[in-house]
Amino acid sequence: MAIRSDLLLDVQQAYKVGKAGNGNPYNEDRPGLLERVHQWNYGFQPQEQLVKDLCVDLLRSTIAAIRQGELTNAEGFIRAMRSIIANSSLSKNNQAVCHSYIAAAVAYLDYKRQRYEDAMEHLQEALAIDERLEQTDPIYRYMHLHRMMLLDNWVRVLARQRSAFEAMDLAFHVLDYLERKIPTLPLPTIWDSSLLAAYPADILSIFFRTIASQIAEAATGQSSISAPDGMMQLRDIFVHACHHSSPAASSTCYLSPASHDWIQLKIAALEDNISVFLQHSIRLLSAGPGRVPTLWYATIVEIILLSQRLPSSNAAFREELMQEVLTWQRLPPAWKTAIWKIA
Image 1 (tube, helix red, strand yellow):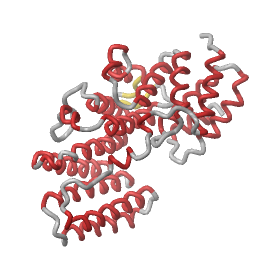
Image 2: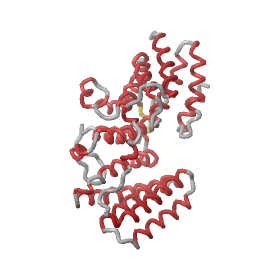
Image 3: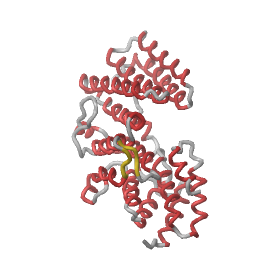
Image 4: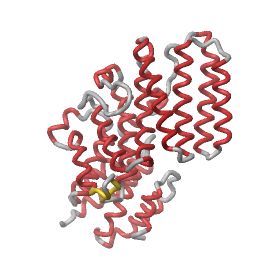
């Protein structure tokens, strides 16, 4: 297929303006949105704020320690939180809120130690606490958002515990759920997508993009992934994205435009539709990395892999892209392997 030279030039220009922060960012990249997701004030009385704030600080320290590989320190922070809660005057329900967040942190610790069964158990514990709180008092309805956060962890653990296919299949279900295209989810606890009508679209877009980023981590640079019965072609798996890629679905795809652009881009790559691929890459690149940069880097990696089939005059641009993506500290190992195969 002949590739229009103007599209190639537009891709290079989009990358330059996006990297410099002079492009056209998606609305979901507005400052402050991510912080709103992590607000944790509902249901706590004024006399409980000090304990809550202390637990929040310890929780952040726990997550930071786990990310840095300081697992023993993380265990100490978790013990401190449990001790504070046990000796506090928090209401029973607010103690449960704290224990749900602690269970999620312990699941993350289990994940880092490759104890995937334990991680799943702690995620189920947190999901059950959240569900009970949601059903106890309307003031705790925000715990449904915490359950959505837990789904990100669930998908990640599932990919390690079972197969990439099962994790990706569930991830597509979650995307459908977030846009209320399906009523429930095949997971523990009761799920009702009608409850999502209470939350702003910009907040739900963050969850949508987080899950789409997990799909991108598994799918970028790949044409097949592991499934229970062997390897499965990605083209067949992305059939599950039909609710987010067909023209008929466009009017109901109101969350995370970046994610929908990336889904279209990946489908175009799998179908060898290079012109459509480049058109979507222009939009993604010009937006810049944003607050959740996975899709931006995933686009760069796909362009690098595609570059083998582009005119040789684009070799310098390919080298520039490779240097850019290899500086990303969170670069998935599979992406690095795919890049080095063509280096």
